[in-house]
Length: 68
Image 1 (spheres, rainbow, N blue to C red):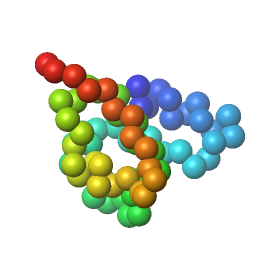
Image 2: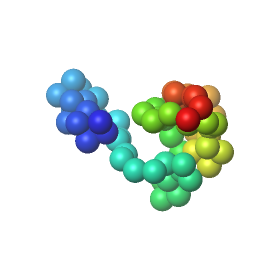
Image 3: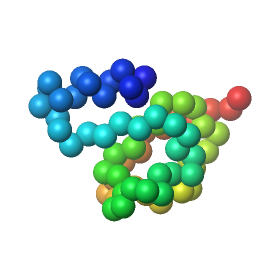
Image 4: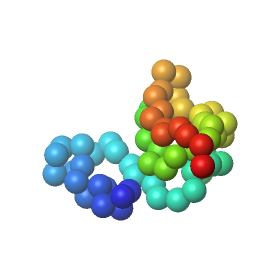
């Protein structure tokens, strides 16, 4: 999903969107400054604290929550 949507943004005029594919449970330590918005595309039992910590002040996260 992340790879499929990445090329859609530029033709729409969005040049400040970055997509990442992988296990983001532990956040993305190589990212400095954090994220404005995080959209998680897999279900989680809870919000991963490291990923939550990477949100900028006032940032937003969309994450599906549920039980296995």
